[in-house]
Length: 266
Length: 337
Image 1 (cartoon, rainbow over the protein chains, first blue to last red):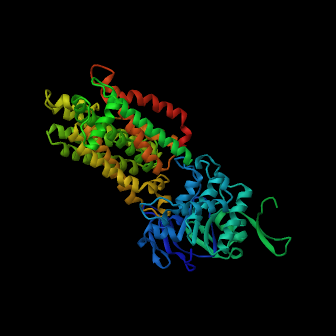
Image 2 (tube, each protein chain N blue to C red):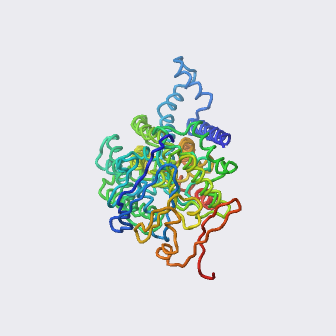
Image 3 (cartoon, rainbow over the protein chains, first blue to last red):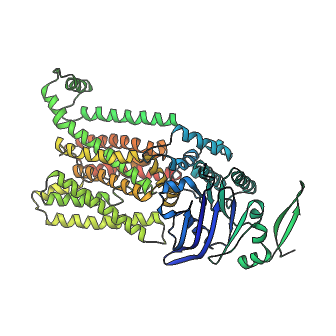
Protein backbone atom coordinates (compact mmCIF):
# COMPACT_ATOMS: atom_id res chain seq x y z
CA UNK A 1 0.00 0.00 0.00
CA UNK A 2 2.04 2.95 1.14
CA UNK A 3 0.99 5.38 -1.59
CA UNK A 4 -1.38 7.49 0.50
CA UNK A 5 -1.96 9.88 -2.37
CA UNK A 6 -3.11 7.34 -4.93
CA UNK A 7 -5.86 8.84 -7.04
CA UNK A 8 -7.90 7.49 -9.93
CA UNK A 9 -9.77 10.02 -12.02
CA UNK A 10 -11.87 10.05 -15.13
CA UNK A 11 -11.81 13.45 -16.83
CA UNK A 12 -14.64 14.39 -19.24
CA UNK A 13 -14.87 10.70 -20.02
CA UNK A 14 -16.86 9.40 -22.98
CA UNK A 15 -17.20 5.65 -22.50
CA UNK A 16 -18.69 2.70 -24.33
CA UNK A 17 -17.85 1.21 -27.71
CA UNK A 18 -17.15 2.93 -31.04
CA UNK A 19 -20.45 1.72 -32.48
CA UNK A 20 -22.33 1.92 -29.20
CA UNK A 21 -21.61 4.93 -26.96
CA UNK A 22 -22.81 4.45 -23.39
CA UNK A 23 -21.93 7.63 -21.52
CA UNK A 24 -20.57 11.12 -22.16
CA UNK A 25 -18.63 13.73 -20.29
CA UNK A 26 -18.29 11.93 -16.97
CA UNK A 27 -15.78 13.38 -14.52
CA UNK A 28 -15.32 11.23 -11.43
CA UNK A 29 -12.46 10.65 -9.01
CA UNK A 30 -11.53 8.20 -6.28
CA UNK A 31 -8.86 8.93 -3.70
CA UNK A 32 -7.35 6.63 -1.08
CA UNK A 33 -9.39 6.45 2.12
CA UNK A 34 -12.77 7.46 0.72
CA UNK A 35 -15.87 5.51 -0.25
CA UNK A 36 -17.69 6.52 -3.40
CA UNK A 37 -20.98 4.82 -4.25
CA UNK A 38 -22.15 4.77 -7.86
CA UNK A 39 -25.91 4.52 -8.22
CA UNK A 40 -27.86 4.17 -11.42
CA UNK A 41 -30.51 2.09 -13.11
CA UNK A 42 -29.91 -1.38 -14.58
CA UNK A 43 -28.15 -1.17 -17.92
CA UNK A 44 -27.23 2.43 -17.18
CA UNK A 45 -23.54 1.87 -17.88
CA UNK A 46 -22.11 1.46 -14.38
CA UNK A 47 -20.05 -1.59 -15.33
CA UNK A 48 -18.92 0.03 -18.58
CA UNK A 49 -17.82 3.13 -16.68
CA UNK A 50 -15.87 0.98 -14.21
CA UNK A 51 -14.18 -0.97 -16.99
CA UNK A 52 -13.17 2.29 -18.63
CA UNK A 53 -11.84 3.70 -15.35
CA UNK A 54 -9.79 0.51 -14.90
CA UNK A 55 -8.30 0.85 -18.36
CA UNK A 56 -9.93 -2.39 -19.49
CA UNK A 57 -11.92 -0.54 -22.15
CA UNK A 58 -10.35 2.35 -24.06
CA UNK A 59 -11.97 5.72 -23.35
CA UNK A 60 -13.87 7.02 -26.37
CA UNK A 61 -13.17 10.59 -25.31
CA UNK A 62 -11.57 12.35 -22.36
CA UNK A 63 -8.98 10.57 -20.27
CA UNK A 64 -8.44 8.30 -17.29
CA UNK A 65 -5.54 9.21 -15.04
CA UNK A 66 -3.99 7.13 -12.31
CA UNK A 67 -1.72 9.10 -9.99
CA UNK A 68 -1.70 11.79 -12.66
CA UNK A 69 -0.50 9.45 -15.43
CA UNK A 70 -2.68 8.50 -18.41
CA UNK A 71 -3.80 4.93 -17.65
CA UNK A 72 -3.32 3.90 -21.28
CA UNK A 73 0.44 4.40 -20.87
CA UNK A 74 0.80 2.20 -17.78
CA UNK A 75 1.68 -1.50 -17.74
CA UNK A 76 -1.11 -3.75 -16.47
CA UNK A 77 0.96 -4.83 -13.46
CA UNK A 78 1.55 -1.18 -12.46
CA UNK A 79 -2.18 -0.49 -12.67
CA UNK A 80 -3.00 -3.67 -10.75
CA UNK A 81 -0.66 -2.66 -7.91
CA UNK A 82 -2.70 0.55 -7.46
CA UNK A 83 -6.27 -0.45 -8.31
CA UNK A 84 -7.92 -3.81 -7.84
CA UNK A 85 -11.22 -4.84 -9.32
CA UNK A 86 -14.04 -6.93 -7.87
CA UNK A 87 -16.25 -8.01 -10.78
CA UNK A 88 -19.74 -9.35 -10.34
CA UNK A 89 -19.45 -12.94 -9.17
CA UNK A 90 -19.62 -15.55 -11.90
CA UNK A 91 -19.33 -19.30 -11.89
CA UNK A 92 -16.04 -19.53 -13.79
CA UNK A 93 -15.09 -22.41 -16.01
CA UNK A 94 -12.49 -24.45 -14.21
CA UNK A 95 -12.70 -25.87 -10.69
CA UNK A 96 -10.00 -23.85 -8.90
CA UNK A 97 -9.98 -23.97 -5.11
CA UNK A 98 -11.03 -20.81 -3.27
CA UNK A 99 -7.43 -20.48 -2.07
CA UNK A 100 -6.11 -20.55 -5.64
CA UNK A 101 -8.66 -17.94 -6.73
CA UNK A 102 -7.57 -15.58 -3.95
CA UNK A 103 -3.92 -16.35 -4.67
CA UNK A 104 -4.43 -15.07 -8.23
CA UNK A 105 -4.73 -11.61 -6.71
CA UNK A 106 -0.97 -11.78 -6.01
CA UNK A 107 -0.06 -11.98 -9.70
CA UNK A 108 0.83 -8.29 -10.13
CA UNK A 109 3.49 -8.69 -7.43
CA UNK A 110 5.13 -11.71 -9.10
CA UNK A 111 7.79 -11.61 -11.77
CA UNK A 112 6.39 -12.78 -15.14
CA UNK A 113 7.68 -16.35 -14.93
CA UNK A 114 7.09 -16.93 -11.22
CA UNK A 115 4.40 -18.83 -9.36
CA UNK A 116 3.18 -17.60 -5.94
CA UNK A 117 5.54 -18.23 -3.05
CA UNK A 118 4.84 -19.25 0.53
CA UNK A 119 4.76 -15.54 1.36
CA UNK A 120 1.96 -15.02 -1.18
CA UNK A 121 0.05 -17.99 0.16
CA UNK A 122 0.28 -16.44 3.63
CA UNK A 123 -1.20 -13.17 2.36
CA UNK A 124 -4.00 -15.05 0.58
CA UNK A 125 -4.80 -17.01 3.74
CA UNK A 126 -4.92 -13.81 5.77
CA UNK A 127 -7.33 -12.22 3.28
CA UNK A 128 -9.51 -15.34 3.36
CA UNK A 129 -9.59 -15.21 7.14
CA UNK A 130 -10.43 -11.50 7.12
CA UNK A 131 -13.61 -12.23 5.16
CA UNK A 132 -14.47 -15.31 7.21
CA UNK A 133 -13.67 -17.68 4.34
CA UNK A 134 -10.86 -19.66 5.97
CA UNK A 135 -13.02 -22.80 6.31
CA UNK A 136 -13.75 -22.67 2.56
CA UNK A 137 -10.11 -22.37 1.44
CA UNK A 138 -9.93 -25.90 0.04
CA UNK A 139 -13.44 -25.88 -1.40
CA UNK A 140 -13.92 -25.67 -5.14
CA UNK A 141 -14.81 -22.13 -6.24
CA UNK A 142 -17.36 -23.28 -8.80
CA UNK A 143 -19.31 -25.21 -6.16
CA UNK A 144 -19.70 -22.64 -3.38
CA UNK A 145 -22.70 -20.30 -3.22
CA UNK A 146 -22.94 -17.06 -5.18
CA UNK A 147 -22.52 -15.02 -2.00
CA UNK A 148 -19.41 -16.96 -0.99
CA UNK A 149 -17.97 -16.43 -4.47
CA UNK A 150 -18.49 -12.69 -4.15
CA UNK A 151 -16.69 -12.69 -0.81
CA UNK A 152 -13.88 -14.74 -2.35
CA UNK A 153 -13.49 -12.15 -5.12
CA UNK A 154 -13.28 -9.40 -2.49
CA UNK A 155 -10.62 -11.44 -0.67
CA UNK A 156 -8.79 -11.72 -3.99
CA UNK A 157 -8.87 -7.93 -4.42
CA UNK A 158 -7.49 -7.54 -0.88
CA UNK A 159 -4.67 -9.96 -1.69
CA UNK A 160 -3.75 -7.62 -4.54
CA UNK A 161 -2.90 -5.00 -1.87
CA UNK A 162 -3.81 -2.01 -4.01
CA UNK A 163 -4.68 1.30 -2.31
CA UNK A 164 -7.85 1.57 -4.44
CA UNK A 165 -10.58 -1.00 -5.05
CA UNK A 166 -13.35 -0.78 -7.62
CA UNK A 167 -16.29 -3.08 -6.82
CA UNK A 168 -19.09 -3.81 -9.27
CA UNK A 169 -22.23 -4.44 -7.20
CA UNK A 170 -20.42 -6.40 -4.50
CA UNK A 171 -23.62 -7.01 -2.54
CA UNK A 172 -25.83 -8.01 -5.47
CA UNK A 173 -25.91 -11.74 -4.83
CA UNK A 174 -25.50 -11.66 -1.06
CA UNK A 175 -28.01 -12.44 1.67
CA UNK A 176 -28.79 -9.78 4.26
CA UNK A 177 -26.09 -10.86 6.71
CA UNK A 178 -23.39 -11.02 4.07
CA UNK A 179 -24.43 -7.64 2.68
CA UNK A 180 -23.88 -6.05 6.10
CA UNK A 181 -20.62 -7.96 6.44
CA UNK A 182 -19.35 -6.67 3.12
CA UNK A 183 -20.37 -3.07 3.91
CA UNK A 184 -18.63 -3.31 7.28
CA UNK A 185 -15.56 -4.59 5.50
CA UNK A 186 -15.75 -1.72 3.00
CA UNK A 187 -15.83 0.77 5.87
CA UNK A 188 -12.95 -0.99 7.60
CA UNK A 189 -10.97 -0.79 4.34
CA UNK A 190 -11.61 2.93 4.04
CA UNK A 191 -10.61 3.41 7.68
CA UNK A 192 -7.30 1.68 6.91
CA UNK A 193 -6.66 4.13 4.07
CA UNK A 194 -8.00 2.24 1.06
CA UNK A 195 -10.28 4.00 -1.40
CA UNK A 196 -13.37 2.06 -2.50
CA UNK A 197 -15.63 2.84 -5.42
CA UNK A 198 -18.64 0.56 -5.53
CA UNK A 199 -21.75 0.27 -7.64
CA UNK A 200 -24.91 -0.44 -5.74
CA UNK A 201 -28.66 -0.47 -6.26
CA UNK A 202 -29.52 0.41 -2.71
CA UNK A 203 -29.62 4.08 -1.63
CA UNK A 204 -29.57 2.95 2.00
CA UNK A 205 -26.17 1.35 1.46
CA UNK A 206 -24.91 4.69 0.20
CA UNK A 207 -26.30 6.43 3.30
CA UNK A 208 -24.65 3.75 5.43
CA UNK A 209 -21.11 3.99 4.16
CA UNK A 210 -20.49 6.47 1.33
CA UNK A 211 -18.47 9.66 1.59
CA UNK A 212 -19.73 10.65 -1.83
CA UNK A 213 -22.47 9.41 -4.10
CA UNK A 214 -22.34 9.58 -7.89
CA UNK A 215 -25.63 9.18 -9.70
CA UNK A 216 -25.37 7.90 -13.27
CA UNK A 217 -28.40 8.44 -15.45
CA UNK A 218 -28.68 8.35 -19.23
CA UNK A 219 -24.92 8.13 -19.57
CA UNK A 220 -24.34 11.33 -17.57
CA UNK A 221 -23.53 12.06 -13.95
CA UNK A 222 -26.52 13.87 -12.46
CA UNK A 223 -24.93 14.18 -9.02
CA UNK A 224 -21.52 13.75 -7.37
CA UNK A 225 -21.91 14.90 -3.78
CA UNK A 226 -22.18 13.71 -0.16
CA UNK A 227 -25.03 11.18 0.21
CA UNK A 228 -27.62 13.53 1.73
CA UNK A 229 -27.16 16.01 -1.10
CA UNK A 230 -26.97 13.47 -3.91
CA UNK A 231 -29.83 11.20 -2.85
CA UNK A 232 -33.09 13.12 -2.56
CA UNK A 233 -36.67 12.41 -3.56
CA UNK A 234 -36.03 14.63 -6.55
CA UNK A 235 -32.91 12.88 -7.86
CA UNK A 236 -34.35 9.41 -7.29
CA UNK A 237 -37.51 10.44 -9.20
CA UNK A 238 -35.32 11.67 -12.04
CA UNK A 239 -33.12 8.56 -12.14
CA UNK A 240 -35.50 5.73 -11.29
CA UNK A 241 -38.92 7.29 -11.95
CA UNK A 242 -40.26 6.36 -8.50
CA UNK A 243 -41.58 8.36 -5.55
CA UNK A 244 -39.63 8.10 -2.28
CA UNK A 245 -39.48 9.77 1.10
CA UNK A 246 -36.27 10.34 3.07
CA UNK A 247 -36.58 9.53 6.75
CA UNK A 248 -34.03 10.23 9.48
CA UNK A 249 -34.03 7.39 11.96
CA UNK A 250 -32.73 7.98 15.48
CA UNK A 251 -30.11 5.39 16.36
CA UNK A 252 -30.11 3.83 19.85
CA UNK A 253 -26.56 4.98 20.45
CA UNK A 254 -27.34 8.57 19.48
CA UNK A 255 -27.24 10.30 16.12
CA UNK A 256 -29.45 9.66 13.13
CA UNK A 257 -29.25 7.71 9.92
CA UNK A 258 -31.14 8.62 6.80
CA UNK A 259 -33.08 5.88 5.02
CA UNK A 260 -34.99 5.92 1.80
CA UNK A 261 -38.59 4.73 1.97
CA UNK A 262 -40.72 4.03 -1.11
CA UNK A 263 -43.70 6.42 -1.03
CA UNK A 264 -46.26 4.01 -2.41
CA UNK A 265 -48.35 2.43 0.35
CA UNK A 266 -47.18 5.01 2.85
CA UNK B 1 -4.28 -31.44 -1.89
CA UNK B 2 -0.48 -31.54 -2.01
CA UNK B 3 -0.48 -35.12 -0.71
CA UNK B 4 -2.97 -36.01 -3.41
CA UNK B 5 -0.84 -34.32 -6.05
CA UNK B 6 2.17 -36.31 -4.88
CA UNK B 7 0.23 -39.56 -5.16
CA UNK B 8 -1.01 -38.66 -8.64
CA UNK B 9 2.51 -37.71 -9.75
CA UNK B 10 3.86 -41.00 -8.40
CA UNK B 11 1.05 -42.91 -10.13
CA UNK B 12 1.66 -41.16 -13.46
CA UNK B 13 5.40 -41.87 -13.30
CA UNK B 14 4.74 -45.51 -12.40
CA UNK B 15 2.37 -45.81 -15.37
CA UNK B 16 5.08 -44.32 -17.57
CA UNK B 17 7.73 -46.75 -16.30
CA UNK B 18 5.41 -49.74 -16.82
CA UNK B 19 4.52 -48.56 -20.32
CA UNK B 20 8.21 -48.25 -21.21
CA UNK B 21 9.08 -51.68 -19.80
CA UNK B 22 6.15 -53.29 -21.62
CA UNK B 23 6.99 -51.53 -24.86
CA UNK B 24 10.55 -52.93 -24.81
CA UNK B 25 9.33 -56.37 -23.79
CA UNK B 26 6.57 -56.66 -26.39
CA UNK B 27 7.15 -57.50 -30.03
CA UNK B 28 8.91 -60.03 -32.23
CA UNK B 29 12.19 -59.66 -30.33
CA UNK B 30 11.21 -59.15 -26.69
CA UNK B 31 13.73 -57.25 -24.60
CA UNK B 32 13.53 -58.29 -20.96
CA UNK B 33 13.73 -55.49 -18.36
CA UNK B 34 16.99 -57.03 -17.08
CA UNK B 35 18.58 -56.94 -20.53
CA UNK B 36 17.33 -53.40 -21.02
CA UNK B 37 18.93 -52.32 -17.75
CA UNK B 38 22.18 -54.03 -18.72
CA UNK B 39 22.23 -52.34 -22.12
CA UNK B 40 21.56 -48.93 -20.59
CA UNK B 41 24.20 -49.51 -17.95
CA UNK B 42 26.81 -50.51 -20.51
CA UNK B 43 26.08 -47.29 -22.39
CA UNK B 44 26.58 -45.27 -19.22
CA UNK B 45 29.61 -47.12 -17.87
CA UNK B 46 31.23 -47.81 -21.22
CA UNK B 47 31.80 -51.46 -20.33
CA UNK B 48 30.55 -54.01 -22.89
CA UNK B 49 27.39 -55.87 -21.86
CA UNK B 50 26.82 -59.61 -22.20
CA UNK B 51 23.53 -59.08 -24.03
CA UNK B 52 23.26 -60.35 -27.59
CA UNK B 53 24.23 -57.67 -30.17
CA UNK B 54 20.92 -58.17 -32.01
CA UNK B 55 19.03 -57.20 -28.88
CA UNK B 56 21.29 -54.22 -28.41
CA UNK B 57 20.68 -53.12 -31.98
CA UNK B 58 16.94 -53.46 -31.49
CA UNK B 59 17.06 -51.28 -28.40
CA UNK B 60 19.18 -48.52 -29.92
CA UNK B 61 18.07 -48.33 -33.51
CA UNK B 62 14.60 -49.87 -33.76
CA UNK B 63 12.53 -49.93 -30.62
CA UNK B 64 14.31 -47.15 -28.73
CA UNK B 65 13.67 -44.36 -31.25
CA UNK B 66 10.08 -45.49 -31.72
CA UNK B 67 9.46 -45.53 -27.98
CA UNK B 68 11.13 -42.14 -27.68
CA UNK B 69 8.92 -40.78 -30.45
CA UNK B 70 5.77 -42.17 -28.81
CA UNK B 71 6.71 -40.56 -25.50
CA UNK B 72 7.54 -37.21 -27.09
CA UNK B 73 4.45 -37.08 -29.30
CA UNK B 74 2.10 -38.17 -26.50
CA UNK B 75 3.55 -35.65 -24.08
CA UNK B 76 3.45 -32.86 -26.67
CA UNK B 77 -0.15 -33.45 -27.70
CA UNK B 78 -1.41 -33.73 -24.13
CA UNK B 79 0.53 -30.66 -22.95
CA UNK B 80 -0.67 -28.62 -25.93
CA UNK B 81 -4.24 -29.75 -25.26
CA UNK B 82 -4.00 -28.67 -21.62
CA UNK B 83 -2.65 -25.27 -22.71
CA UNK B 84 -5.38 -24.70 -25.30
CA UNK B 85 -8.09 -25.69 -22.83
CA UNK B 86 -6.91 -23.21 -20.21
CA UNK B 87 -6.29 -20.51 -22.78
CA UNK B 88 -9.67 -20.71 -24.46
CA UNK B 89 -11.43 -21.27 -21.14
CA UNK B 90 -12.94 -24.25 -22.78
CA UNK B 91 -12.52 -27.87 -21.73
CA UNK B 92 -13.79 -29.05 -25.11
CA UNK B 93 -10.95 -27.73 -27.21
CA UNK B 94 -7.89 -29.68 -28.23
CA UNK B 95 -5.32 -29.45 -31.01
CA UNK B 96 -7.66 -31.42 -33.31
CA UNK B 97 -10.80 -29.41 -32.53
CA UNK B 98 -9.05 -26.05 -32.90
CA UNK B 99 -7.85 -27.02 -36.37
CA UNK B 100 -4.18 -27.03 -35.34
CA UNK B 101 -3.75 -30.71 -36.18
CA UNK B 102 -5.66 -30.24 -39.44
CA UNK B 103 -3.56 -27.23 -40.38
CA UNK B 104 -0.36 -29.02 -39.47
CA UNK B 105 -1.56 -31.97 -41.56
CA UNK B 106 -2.08 -29.74 -44.61
CA UNK B 107 1.39 -28.31 -44.15
CA UNK B 108 3.01 -31.71 -43.70
CA UNK B 109 1.11 -33.34 -46.59
CA UNK B 110 2.16 -30.42 -48.75
CA UNK B 111 5.73 -31.10 -47.63
CA UNK B 112 5.46 -34.80 -48.54
CA UNK B 113 3.82 -33.84 -51.84
CA UNK B 114 6.71 -31.54 -52.68
CA UNK B 115 9.21 -34.17 -51.44
CA UNK B 116 10.76 -31.73 -48.97
CA UNK B 117 13.23 -32.68 -46.19
CA UNK B 118 11.91 -33.40 -42.66
CA UNK B 119 12.83 -30.00 -41.25
CA UNK B 120 10.92 -28.21 -44.02
CA UNK B 121 7.92 -30.49 -43.45
CA UNK B 122 8.02 -29.48 -39.78
CA UNK B 123 8.23 -25.81 -40.67
CA UNK B 124 5.26 -26.07 -43.03
CA UNK B 125 3.29 -28.00 -40.41
CA UNK B 126 3.97 -25.26 -37.85
CA UNK B 127 3.08 -22.42 -40.23
CA UNK B 128 -0.19 -24.01 -41.33
CA UNK B 129 -1.07 -25.05 -37.78
CA UNK B 130 -0.60 -21.47 -36.59
CA UNK B 131 -2.61 -20.20 -39.53
CA UNK B 132 -5.45 -22.59 -38.74
CA UNK B 133 -5.68 -21.67 -35.05
CA UNK B 134 -5.49 -17.97 -35.94
CA UNK B 135 -8.36 -18.41 -38.40
CA UNK B 136 -10.48 -20.29 -35.85
CA UNK B 137 -9.82 -17.67 -33.19
CA UNK B 138 -10.57 -14.82 -35.60
CA UNK B 139 -13.90 -16.36 -36.61
CA UNK B 140 -14.81 -17.10 -33.00
CA UNK B 141 -14.10 -13.54 -31.83
CA UNK B 142 -15.79 -11.80 -34.75
CA UNK B 143 -19.06 -13.72 -34.40
CA UNK B 144 -20.85 -12.03 -31.52
CA UNK B 145 -24.12 -12.66 -29.77
CA UNK B 146 -23.71 -16.42 -29.48
CA UNK B 147 -22.34 -18.66 -26.78
CA UNK B 148 -18.57 -18.13 -27.22
CA UNK B 149 -17.78 -21.75 -26.33
CA UNK B 150 -20.13 -22.99 -29.00
CA UNK B 151 -18.84 -20.57 -31.63
CA UNK B 152 -15.24 -21.57 -30.95
CA UNK B 153 -15.98 -25.27 -31.36
CA UNK B 154 -18.10 -24.63 -34.47
CA UNK B 155 -15.39 -22.44 -35.99
CA UNK B 156 -12.93 -25.27 -35.35
CA UNK B 157 -15.23 -27.75 -37.08
CA UNK B 158 -15.63 -25.37 -40.06
CA UNK B 159 -11.92 -24.69 -40.47
CA UNK B 160 -11.24 -28.41 -39.94
CA UNK B 161 -13.60 -29.25 -42.82
CA UNK B 162 -11.86 -26.73 -45.07
CA UNK B 163 -8.45 -28.17 -44.18
CA UNK B 164 -9.76 -31.68 -44.78
CA UNK B 165 -10.74 -30.58 -48.28
CA UNK B 166 -7.23 -29.20 -48.86
CA UNK B 167 -5.74 -32.52 -47.78
CA UNK B 168 -8.15 -34.40 -50.05
CA UNK B 169 -7.12 -32.19 -52.98
CA UNK B 170 -3.44 -32.86 -52.32
CA UNK B 171 -4.16 -36.59 -52.18
CA UNK B 172 -5.86 -36.45 -55.58
CA UNK B 173 -2.89 -34.60 -57.02
CA UNK B 174 -0.28 -36.87 -55.39
CA UNK B 175 1.55 -39.62 -57.23
CA UNK B 176 -0.68 -42.67 -56.55
CA UNK B 177 2.21 -45.17 -56.32
CA UNK B 178 4.70 -43.44 -54.02
CA UNK B 179 3.23 -40.38 -52.36
CA UNK B 180 -0.41 -41.37 -51.88
CA UNK B 181 0.18 -44.47 -49.72
CA UNK B 182 2.68 -42.51 -47.63
CA UNK B 183 0.22 -39.64 -47.19
CA UNK B 184 -2.72 -41.91 -46.40
CA UNK B 185 -0.85 -43.97 -43.86
CA UNK B 186 0.63 -40.85 -42.32
CA UNK B 187 -2.78 -39.18 -42.00
CA UNK B 188 -4.02 -42.11 -39.94
CA UNK B 189 -1.16 -41.63 -37.54
CA UNK B 190 1.81 -43.94 -37.22
CA UNK B 191 5.16 -44.12 -35.52
CA UNK B 192 6.36 -47.04 -37.66
CA UNK B 193 8.67 -44.80 -39.66
CA UNK B 194 9.94 -42.74 -36.76
CA UNK B 195 13.72 -43.04 -36.69
CA UNK B 196 16.49 -41.33 -34.75
CA UNK B 197 16.57 -38.46 -37.30
CA UNK B 198 12.88 -37.68 -36.82
CA UNK B 199 13.31 -37.74 -33.09
CA UNK B 200 16.33 -35.44 -33.30
CA UNK B 201 14.37 -32.84 -35.26
CA UNK B 202 11.13 -33.04 -33.26
CA UNK B 203 12.52 -33.15 -29.72
CA UNK B 204 14.08 -29.65 -29.74
CA UNK B 205 10.87 -28.14 -31.14
CA UNK B 206 8.80 -29.85 -28.45
CA UNK B 207 11.20 -28.68 -25.75
CA UNK B 208 11.14 -25.12 -27.10
CA UNK B 209 7.35 -25.20 -26.85
CA UNK B 210 7.28 -26.76 -23.41
CA UNK B 211 9.62 -24.27 -21.72
CA UNK B 212 7.46 -21.12 -22.14
CA UNK B 213 4.37 -23.05 -21.10
CA UNK B 214 6.12 -24.04 -17.89
CA UNK B 215 7.46 -20.52 -17.26
CA UNK B 216 4.03 -18.97 -17.81
CA UNK B 217 2.24 -21.65 -15.79
CA UNK B 218 0.79 -19.25 -13.20
CA UNK B 219 -0.34 -16.65 -15.74
CA UNK B 220 -2.09 -19.31 -17.79
CA UNK B 221 -4.33 -19.88 -14.75
CA UNK B 222 -5.42 -16.26 -14.87
CA UNK B 223 -6.11 -16.40 -18.59
CA UNK B 224 -8.69 -19.09 -17.86
CA UNK B 225 -10.69 -16.46 -15.92
CA UNK B 226 -11.10 -14.37 -19.04
CA UNK B 227 -9.32 -11.37 -20.43
CA UNK B 228 -10.74 -8.59 -18.31
CA UNK B 229 -10.16 -10.18 -14.93
CA UNK B 230 -6.69 -11.30 -15.91
CA UNK B 231 -5.76 -7.80 -17.07
CA UNK B 232 -7.25 -6.23 -13.93
CA UNK B 233 -4.91 -8.49 -11.95
CA UNK B 234 -1.86 -7.33 -13.89
CA UNK B 235 -1.47 -9.82 -16.73
CA UNK B 236 -0.56 -8.54 -20.21
CA UNK B 237 -3.03 -10.96 -21.73
CA UNK B 238 -2.25 -10.35 -25.40
CA UNK B 239 1.43 -11.15 -24.96
CA UNK B 240 0.89 -14.19 -22.75
CA UNK B 241 -1.83 -15.55 -25.03
CA UNK B 242 0.37 -15.20 -28.12
CA UNK B 243 3.27 -16.92 -26.38
CA UNK B 244 1.07 -19.80 -25.23
CA UNK B 245 -0.60 -20.26 -28.64
CA UNK B 246 2.75 -20.19 -30.45
CA UNK B 247 4.29 -22.68 -27.98
CA UNK B 248 1.38 -25.12 -28.03
CA UNK B 249 1.11 -24.91 -31.81
CA UNK B 250 4.84 -25.49 -32.26
CA UNK B 251 4.64 -28.61 -30.08
CA UNK B 252 1.61 -29.91 -31.95
CA UNK B 253 3.21 -29.28 -35.33
CA UNK B 254 6.44 -30.98 -34.28
CA UNK B 255 4.44 -33.98 -33.06
CA UNK B 256 2.28 -34.13 -36.18
CA UNK B 257 5.31 -33.91 -38.46
CA UNK B 258 6.77 -37.17 -37.14
CA UNK B 259 3.64 -39.12 -36.22
CA UNK B 260 0.85 -37.92 -38.49
CA UNK B 261 -2.57 -37.14 -37.11
CA UNK B 262 -3.27 -38.70 -33.75
CA UNK B 263 -6.50 -37.41 -32.29
CA UNK B 264 -8.07 -37.58 -28.85
CA UNK B 265 -4.94 -37.42 -26.72
CA UNK B 266 -5.02 -33.62 -26.50
CA UNK B 267 -8.67 -33.71 -25.49
CA UNK B 268 -8.97 -36.69 -23.16
CA UNK B 269 -5.67 -36.70 -21.28
CA UNK B 270 -5.88 -33.10 -19.92
CA UNK B 271 -9.40 -33.93 -18.73
CA UNK B 272 -8.12 -36.90 -16.79
CA UNK B 273 -5.25 -34.87 -15.41
CA UNK B 274 -7.62 -32.09 -14.31
CA UNK B 275 -9.83 -34.61 -12.53
CA UNK B 276 -6.78 -35.93 -10.73
CA UNK B 277 -4.89 -32.77 -9.72
CA UNK B 278 -7.29 -29.89 -10.36
CA UNK B 279 -6.99 -27.05 -12.88
CA UNK B 280 -3.81 -25.33 -11.60
CA UNK B 281 -1.66 -25.29 -14.75
CA UNK B 282 1.57 -25.74 -12.78
CA UNK B 283 0.33 -29.22 -11.83
CA UNK B 284 -1.85 -29.85 -14.87
CA UNK B 285 0.98 -29.42 -17.39
CA UNK B 286 3.47 -32.00 -16.03
CA UNK B 287 0.75 -34.52 -15.16
CA UNK B 288 -0.87 -34.15 -18.60
CA UNK B 289 2.48 -34.56 -20.35
CA UNK B 290 3.41 -37.65 -18.31
CA UNK B 291 0.02 -39.32 -18.77
CA UNK B 292 -0.01 -38.41 -22.48
CA UNK B 293 3.41 -40.00 -22.97
CA UNK B 294 2.41 -43.17 -21.12
CA UNK B 295 -0.92 -43.41 -22.93
CA UNK B 296 0.45 -43.01 -26.45
CA UNK B 297 3.28 -45.46 -25.76
CA UNK B 298 0.77 -48.05 -24.52
CA UNK B 299 -1.42 -47.46 -27.57
CA UNK B 300 1.58 -47.71 -29.91
CA UNK B 301 2.66 -50.96 -28.27
CA UNK B 302 -0.84 -52.31 -28.87
CA UNK B 303 -0.74 -51.04 -32.44
CA UNK B 304 2.38 -53.00 -33.36
CA UNK B 305 1.73 -56.19 -31.41
CA UNK B 306 -1.97 -57.08 -31.52
CA UNK B 307 -2.24 -57.89 -35.21
CA UNK B 308 0.05 -59.09 -37.95
CA UNK B 309 -0.27 -55.66 -39.57
CA UNK B 310 0.25 -52.32 -37.87
CA UNK B 311 -2.99 -50.74 -36.75
CA UNK B 312 -2.91 -46.96 -37.41
CA UNK B 313 -2.59 -45.00 -34.15
CA UNK B 314 -5.33 -42.53 -35.01
CA UNK B 315 -7.72 -45.46 -35.33
CA UNK B 316 -6.74 -46.93 -31.97
CA UNK B 317 -6.80 -43.64 -30.03
CA UNK B 318 -10.26 -42.96 -31.44
CA UNK B 319 -11.44 -46.46 -30.42
CA UNK B 320 -10.08 -45.95 -26.92
CA UNK B 321 -10.64 -42.20 -26.64
CA UNK B 322 -14.28 -41.94 -27.72
CA UNK B 323 -15.77 -44.15 -24.99
CA UNK B 324 -13.38 -42.64 -22.43
CA UNK B 325 -14.45 -39.14 -23.31
CA UNK B 326 -18.13 -40.09 -23.24
CA UNK B 327 -17.64 -41.56 -19.80
CA UNK B 328 -15.85 -38.41 -18.67
CA UNK B 329 -18.58 -36.20 -20.10
CA UNK B 330 -21.29 -38.06 -18.22
CA UNK B 331 -19.31 -38.43 -15.04
CA UNK B 332 -17.50 -35.15 -14.69
CA UNK B 333 -19.83 -32.41 -15.86
CA UNK B 334 -19.24 -30.77 -12.54
CA UNK B 335 -15.49 -30.72 -12.94
CA UNK B 336 -15.74 -27.79 -15.33
CA UNK B 337 -19.15 -26.32 -14.62
